[in-house]
Length: 106
Image (cartoon, rainbow, N blue to C red; front, top):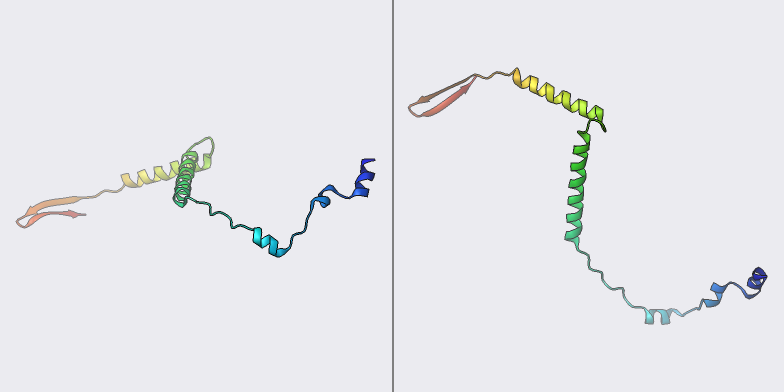
């Protein structure tokens, strides 16, 4: 019944549509208000968010349970760096001449 009544009378939305001339529409149109945007706040948010994201990834990558391959690679790199530093010897000869102090690295 309701469908038959709807077909006879037309859609309810079509009954509410009114046509307005272009000149009347432009006469009633108002410019949009300029919305103030705090660009410094947005930049601060982006920089702090990026820093927080970077810091959290660094912390998470050093977690052995979450990223075991990265953790092992970092540990191997630090062990190799320590081994290289222990194997390096420097000989310093320092003295004092009449004109000033000097050091020679051999």
